Length: 85
Image 1 (cartoon, rainbow, N blue to C red):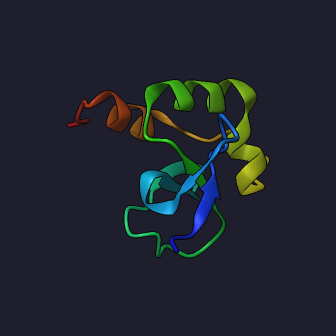
Image 2 (cartoon, rainbow, N blue to C red; image 1 turned 90 degrees about the vertical axis):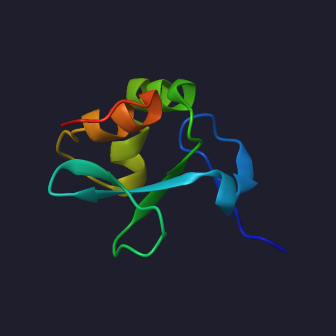
């Protein structure tokens, strides 16, 4: 049986393999593809809709227990399919 995690945006439960894990690194959200980076992680459906809900609700800061503002542009670009050069 595969582990189940909860999306920080829509609060629905899903298998770990269908969600993205993100961690805070020096006030920036970083996608943890292999789910091995140290520190507290937050799980998110890999959709732009869930991303926008999470940003609107300030869910990343609460889930990661970070009080400062987080830079989410890298995550947004990844979900939009754009590459930051």
